[in-house]
Length: 176
Image 1 (cartoon, rainbow, N blue to C red):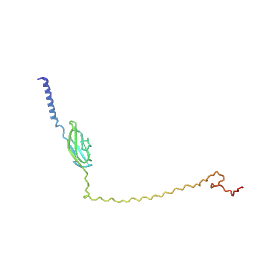
Image 2: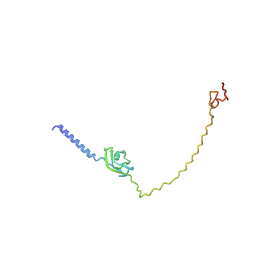
Image 3: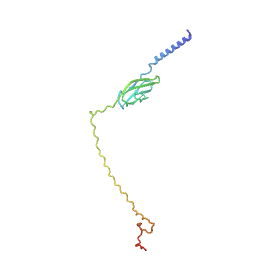
Image 4: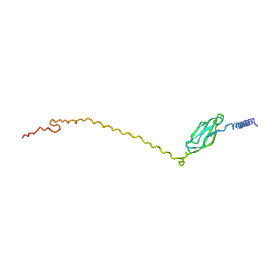
């Protein structure tokens, strides 16, 4: 056989063995995720507390099934949408790639209605009289405007009197 073929086969075997031993040595090196959710069933508007204690983790991505992710190691999340929500945690470590855990599920239900048969009726609110409204003060009538006498009409006819009619000079003689 040609030496070149033997060298290629030897290199291929060495590469396959190194991949095999690498996977065997490091496949189980990623730690298990240690996530905790404090409640599995909540009412709409309530919050859950979430924590992760995965050894060697340096980054987190929490997906709560309602499009509101968190990138913190721990915290609180409030649900408003009713139904089942799958919680997915992706953990990144300095010495391992992403590890995903989606084993948690939470149920969000509607707020339970108060059972009015078991609860006493609320006490009526006390009646409080409103203070009397003050009487409005009368406003004084405006002072009348000073009276000005009407101006006398002016006439250009010297034969007229104060009333605009011709002056009566007495009887008039008619000549024939």
